[in-house]
Length: 183
Image: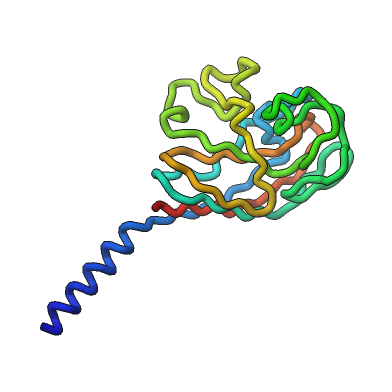
């Protein structure tokens, strides 16, 4: 009887462990990885592939580092003051042409469903500028900053970048720990 309970307990623990799968990765996001969003003057690189998620679950990010950009230095949350009248990636995402920007040079992201990423010609670039056959829509971008935790409903890939469009004079970048826990 005792052996049967022990076997049953072990089986329950194995099933519980299998139900929750996690993966983690550390990536470096270069200060030029803007995905060519905004109306900058070149030097942009595609967004960085951070992590592929296998299905519904939670993605958590934690970032650190510094980006040197035109007028100053920013951490993952960006700079609080206005520094540019140029359209930046998060402004383009909201359909704003210019004006005071928030989170300048901050860490930004986009979660792309697996079916989109697997299309022939996909690149992590602004799809509105004819830079990729299949790319990223500006409205999909979101602020990530220093720490972010969010739910995903399906399999897909998290891409990360910088909220700056004139990246040709940038240096530095962010280190980001990314974790996915499946439901």
